[in-house]
Length: 454
Image (cartoon, rainbow, N blue to C red; front, side):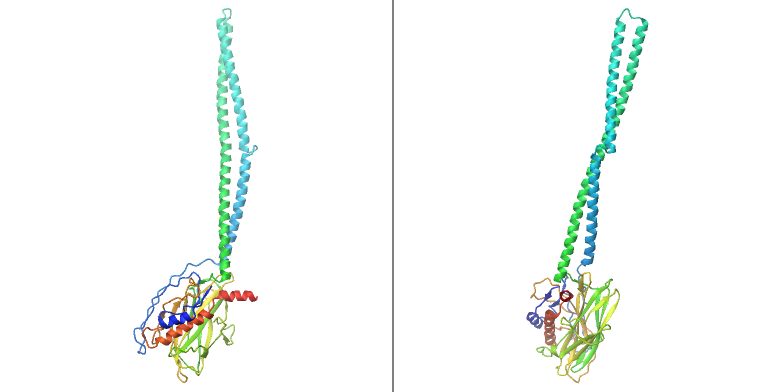
């Protein structure tokens, strides 16, 4: 995956446009980031009671692409199909050669039938000549006044016998001709059928070769995309939730909360990366309080408290099976000198499989909280909102205006237009955009870094 870095531009947009949120950060190649209807408060800032909210509209999800493992299987299947086609073509060629051979059974049968037909034709010719000779003998005997009755009777009998023999020879010739024609047709049909089958086999080989080349090309492209970090996809089946984050956090205090990642994808995710970051400004929105916030993580596999890595990931969850979940403990410490202001926590989850496919949650989860001065009380519940993770289909350095969708659980809205509290919140979002754009990197970079150091 590529990374958008909007930096100062994102800050400027966030300070002037309430709908701009997190225009920089981990992005999914080819994943639609269609705007959602933004939620606005029904009350003004500082009013009592809960503000109204809208239900986020469902986002269109990009069709899932085959994984590298699936593409490798497709190549193996295509290779087998091609090898089978080559073998079938060779067998078809052998059948053609056999059908054209003089020793082919049907060819031999046709040759024998031809020989018999020629013999029958010669026999008929001889019988016809015998009839003619017998007729001439009859004519001669009848013309000879000295011939006896016995001579005439004998000539007529010979003629009748010659005629009968000629008729038999004609029938034999007709039968032999029919047999030869049938045998020749059978031989020719077999040759034509063999030639047609060979042509079909040749076409099948060409098609199988094209399919193999296409499968190999798709696999090569997928591997290239994976190397470039461009093949990761949005995965709504990876769910991230946060619990226990207060809506008010006092300077000088430490609060514990947790983050749960649930695998609803139906398959095991080999490596899952929980992402979380916190950002804050003073009430004016002019002062970034990020340096006064310290966020650490802990989990069952690594119970000690750890700082987030440079990309904002809270460790790694290995082999998260289908239907399983894993919890990450989080601890936020606010410097005692921090002034009152506003803050947000941003979470998401990414994964990378040994097969090469990768991706993450399609949305950022954003939790708004209030910073109160030292001596104040922490408590309440952070306001939860979501915004789509933008697709990276724009040149780096470009910006994206992504409306915020929120589910309000405390007073106020995440970016409440017209509110006196909007300025620090918008500046806060701009600062988050900078941090995300500069530091939050999807797992592809982590994977490449790991492979480079291996």
